Image 1: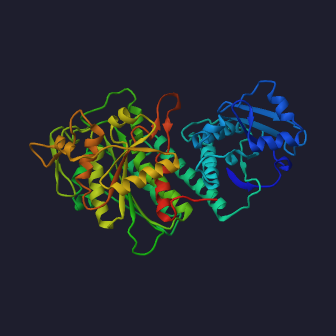
Image 2: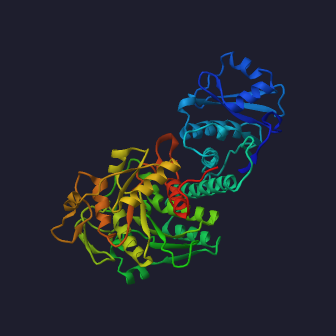
Image 3: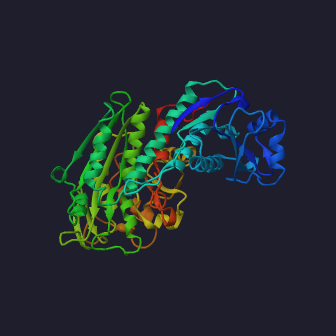
Length: 502
């Protein structure tokens, strides 16, 4: 959708629809009060009829209000004024977009981003309005033979800024919001594609296509022969059970100064995970196409970097494979040798994500990184611990952990930190190899991160377990695009001031 800034007298805005917020108890927001005044109190008279109370997400579409240049006014419930925050803004925007996209207007102007939110700048509210709008418009229909689309979908949205003037910051709010939304949409698309389409080779092809969009981004794809020469025995052991060859995708974005240490993002790209010989239960196994959402989030974040032309150096690494049962697949008790030289006893072949990640993390050393963040749908234990609201965060560096947490809070794509104490390391002891790939029943998310930490002692590192946040199940089944928002915000903060103000 196209977004533009609008300013001036609200009642004189010529548009198919004006979107205004009303708080709980029929309390008018400032833009709604302006419309009420211009209509000689007509808005208040309509509200007194009791059809609309201002509950969060409630909507009421009005026609031909006197004194208005617009054709329609859409009232959107904002909930209690004292409790209005960014999640409430997202909910109100989503409600408005959902209604209008299925209605007649081709364009509209929203005032919701003007509603005051404590500690949120205009940059932030404009950006969040765009993100919530694009989230509401997203549909995955690539694999359907017949697609029923809205007859007159919403194509243009004006963002009303009142008496403020357009500025570099407001323009950035739009460009950043669109870039983050497009990056998230790419991650969702890749996650939603089935495993027979989105293979490691397909992922590599999408990365190469992304590289063709910018001279700042160079993409390299390593095949199994090259990985074998590098000694990536852990990663290659996972792909042995599949007819699909493994790929190591390296995306090198150079938007910063020459010689500046890059941030390295490593995303788990398991395009389908049946568990291998330790096969998963059949119920909901189709959702294991989402086991590559960590890798998808890295592609989405790199796409956002390209679109925003961020002034930072970023390396994206996606180790990609399938994990299937086969006569050549890993067996419980097998011992494999990682790129680092450490030997690993494979006690459970369904703990394969850490096997492909550990070699990618070793590979990341060559870039002399400023920081490394890996992103993976790694453990069901993280879902038990945190549900679907927050990603799990573990790190070997306090400052880096605080940066990631802050980026999550600022973007609304939150993470929660778990301990990475040495006390847990002994759960990975093996009688036959340097390390076991599982640590028993207790603290599964933590011991998985402990495993990865054995390969990250040469740089600052953080691990995001997105098993609970990468996709939704049930009637709303689909990839969420998380944590593209968090990662992009992290990189934005590294480019300059931690918060943009307008």
